[in-house]
Length: 59
Image (cartoon, rainbow, N blue to C red; front, side, top):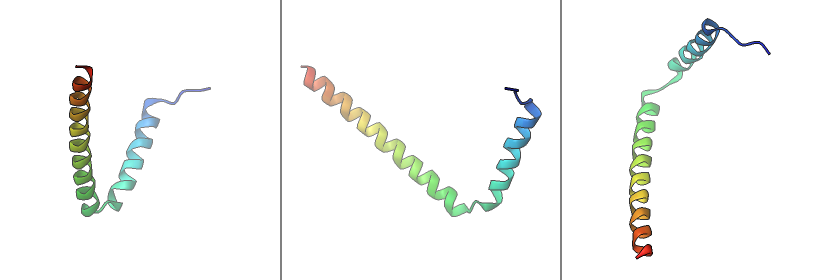
C-alpha cells in the first residue's frame, strides 16, 4: 500500500472544498449555525441535569 504525498491530499481537499462552496446558500449556513447552537445548549443543559440528579441520587 502506497501513501499519498501531501500535495495530492491538499489538492484533493481544496478541490472538494472549492466545488462545495458555490452550492452553499446563506440560508443553509444560518440554519446550520442556529441548529448547532441549539444542540450545544441542549447538550449542556442535559449534562448539568444529569450531574445534578447523579449527585442527588448518591446522597
